Image 1 (cartoon, helix red, strand yellow):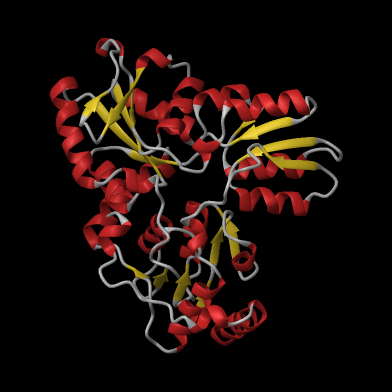
Image 2 (tube, rainbow, N blue to C red; image 1 turned 90 degrees about the vertical axis):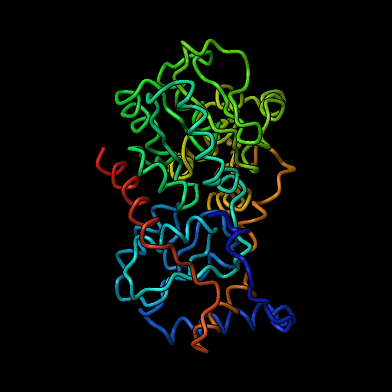
Length: 366
């Protein structure tokens, strides 16, 4: 379910929290964490602000954090510093006695919200009327629980940016066509790496409920949902050309959620973990331009003073929805636990959980 459908009466953070100093808020967060001990677990995504990252019990990608949270069975509360679909996954993987908390319910993901169940069911009917029962759906883990559940019910699997090639290869062995959602760029870049020609791919517009373009439908293999990451789509070929001209020794590394032309023109492309690992392993004095979220790029710059690192797009802003999780909202959420009136509780219904986990388990078993 899209985040806007879930917020009927969002909890309003009292204005007093923003009147506190950073030091006052940080001290109170540390106090609350200490008082709860192992009954509280706080995972934080790589793209979070440093003011939140400092309190993290684990830092990682969305699925990785949900899996780590699932292993923390002693924790009664999982305060997930990420976005809505990540907290949903954590809720589906954790035990019934555990509560998953999202510190600000407005922290959604624009990519995930580009595909909802009504759109997908309508699209599925349309595509099957054109192609028959020859389609297998795959969904990026950056999708809502209801989209994962649909994919699970229809024999498909989830994918991550790290394993997309393996899962897409499996899917192409099962069916003639693959519907890849919600990120068209990850789907296109992955299929291209597997040798699928661009002419064998088509974009499906949920707004128009139809395939776009005039491709030969008899040659079609990959159907790309018309969705994208609002951060990674901001990196352009012009950004790469500017770096090549001004600093030709610079290595360019980007995330596969970037457009196809950017990924092809870069020196390296891979998941967030891949980017971090490459930078960690790089030789001193090497130069890097990174095409991913700004909070992570700035953190890598601070962690590697022996390397020359910059953002591929110097004018890029951090992920706005991810950054809704800030120190005041984190403190407000933790205070609500102290007061035994938790706010931002994420709960996925039983049937959706069952179907979504089917898609996730297929991925893990491949």
